[in-house]
Length: 130
Image 1: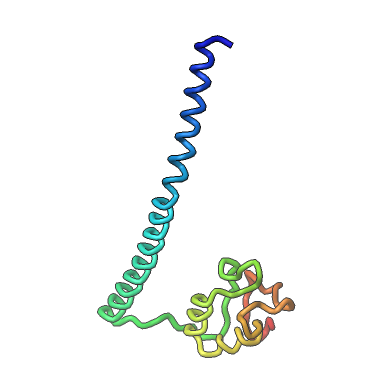
Image 2: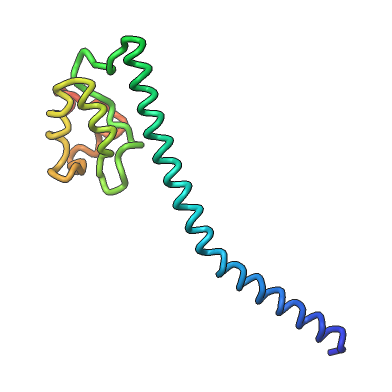
């Protein structure tokens, strides 16, 4: 190995070491940026909800209400462990008074879809289907 090769190998090792050190030192910055991003998303969601409510109030529109009990059990709101998203469950329950009863029939006390109703995912849930 020539002297030139040794110098190149030393430079490569130094550059690698510097990269690792910079990566380790940047972790607190990355963690902080992630926290800020999460906070901005939460704040944006809250502001969006408030603007929506204000718009509905100004225009005289109320919440959407279904004329019949029932809903399609959207797979986007059922976790892999069967837990039904609380926000979506409340939205569907608010849309018709009997929807809350339907949810109580198809879920356990913790809000997980009962195994015997897994076939209803992406299908209509109403008094006839359960």
